[in-house]
Image (cartoon, rainbow, N blue to C red; front, side, top):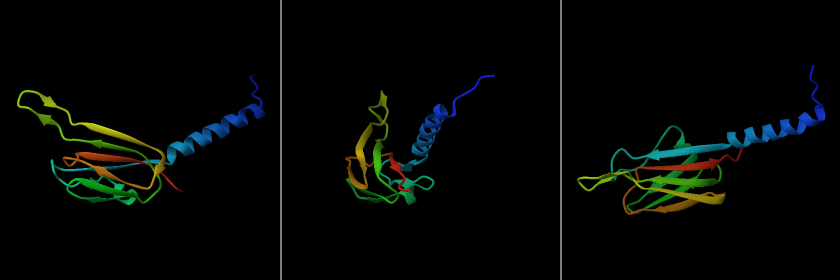
Length: 120
């Protein structure tokens, strides 16, 4: 029978618990538009996590549930008549997280996703 020292197992249990808590506290808030030029609408409970105020060329966002560490923006696919191009994607990592920001765009995006670190 194999015997495992309890003192060696304790730090591993702490590390595993911290990993689970870290993963559990990250939440994604996703907003999508139904059509090009349309307003973004929340998916599931995204509107409870992040609030958006949408203008013609800017989107003001405010986190309602903790710091945002990453914002991803997807554009609409485009075609020149022969070649169909996928929509552009912009990824912004916010070191340390922030509670609000402004997204500037030429064309309204197809989707925006916020990675939110829960505050408790």
